Length: 127
View 1 (cartoon, rainbow, N blue to C red):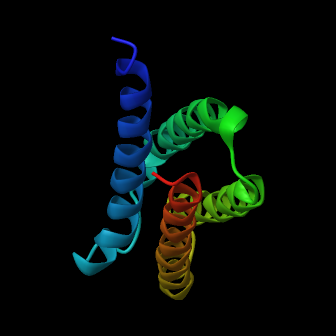
View 2 (cartoon, rainbow, N blue to C red):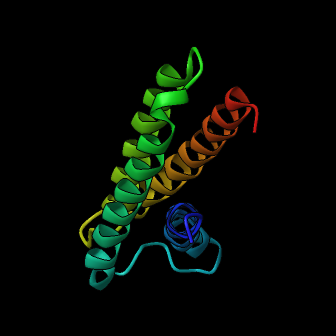
């Protein structure tokens, strides 16, 4: 039972990220150039879920974090803020298609960087 909450938080963190970025960026390839404005509350809820689960995961590791872990966590956090901003901007209705395309590409590149930073963080812990 002691493994349930950490596993749930990790699953929530990864699943919400996949759903948000997949919906925002994948929509471009399906002919839907923007996240529906009605989904703005869902995007906000996803951002809150990722922050809360990420905060929980971070607090679980703070005591045993190796050298360099905190710096890379800060980099990952700042990149994630950028991705959230891009996805949130995609819910705007008054943006030009060119801006939307830039936001989608920026969210995709930022997401790749966040995933790479997360993988490096795991390797620092030796897991």
